[in-house]
Image 1 (cartoon, helix red, strand yellow):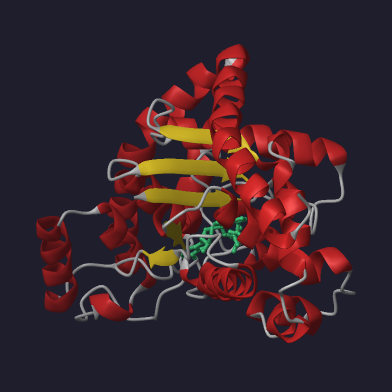
Image 2 (cartoon, rainbow, N blue to C red):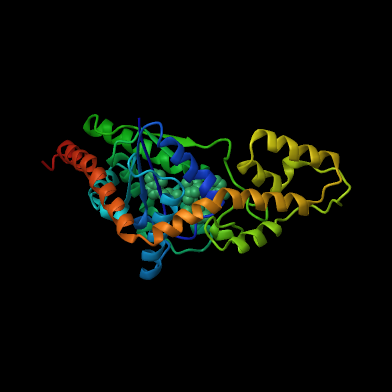
Length: 320
Ligand code: ADP
Ligand code: TRP
């Protein structure tokens, strides 16, 4: 099984990214041949500052390695170190109906926000299809919001295969259903665009403050509470074992526990989970040559498959 996923370097990673995409992708690295990349070409659709792009790309590299990406198992690379994806993007563009791109939720959301659409924003899913198809991935672990883009990839792969003969593996999305959507401080989907995130590698004091500011209902300390509708509990579940979850849920239902207590326990869970990774990240940051070597080696490994696929596609369409 070949697994591929990517993440844009367009902001500080938060626990929505971590539980929705990073951890499932890192778990899958044990089950097959994994490819993971930093989607800096995609980030050009929203990051217009060169220094922010460089810094963001580097930060994501440190974040993934600190969270347990094993470079021996997983080819980890910068998208821009594999410019071959652009040739494939063009070959795919010619079998991609415009309507398919115009129907993408993320494109429509951007239009609804009043963002003036350019070609990059519309073509975004075609580049994503090229990322996936270029390594002939079978499985693509992503958060729920990216599922439609993987479906576009499947459509485009099928259209190409139909027009030119079997060329691409048609991939399956893999959604971490137990996580689905991680709520933010306000209960909406956690997202950097809503300003409701808890960053995984921000200042730990700040993270604690953010946790203490999670929105709850106004039930008093004595009243019984419903864990299933509570944002604190939804986040606590992500960190806790089933026993720990059941124990806290029991205290919610009995009453006599205030939301402040639940927040403190969540903050402790957060700290216990991320403190060791934070230390690893600091070590990596002090060792940039090692990180650069990992990225270069990852790109070299991905290039072997990419060259093969691009050759095959060039031949299929008659460029060779
Ligand atoms: P953001 O919404 O903060 O801009 P991205 O769109 O860059 O995050 O998402 C990067 C990855 O993390 C995607 O695979 C996405 O599905 C996943 N992800 C982001 N936010 C969440 C969330 N709140 N719950 C689950 N997964 C998420
Ligand atoms: N669009 C994805 C996101 O915003 C990032 C991405 C780019 C990706 N190419 C990909 C994810 C290929 C999976 C496979 O999260």
